[in-house]
Length: 126
Image 1 (cartoon, rainbow, N blue to C red):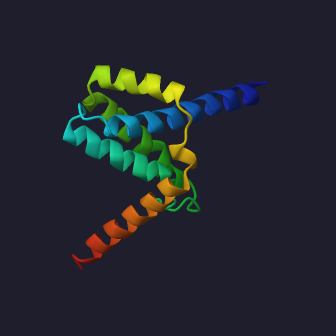
Image 2: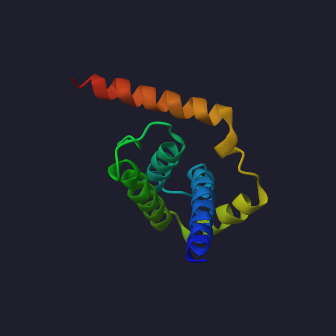
Image 3: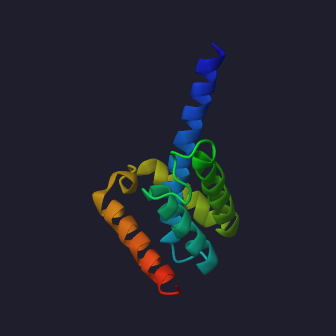
């Protein structure tokens, strides 16, 4: 019984995470969102959608640690920097719109291209 409750809690947490990622995406496109908040939101959304992790998932314990710490921290920080009215409006939009971004091939291509550009930029320093 306890295992099913934990799985239910984990499922709700994952659904909330997915919703927050889409809400961050919408907030990053709002003109009223400050630049720093936009940057953190875009980085967080990009990391969430990216097939590339800082620490590969196959490494025991540490592989999932970056996902369990970085995503919630990025979401928390972005929410703190986004004006409350903008965040609330984006939540309403998230609930009324489908999670098209999270299932979009175009979004996947954009994320991969961003990682490639970031990699090329990082390599230019070496």
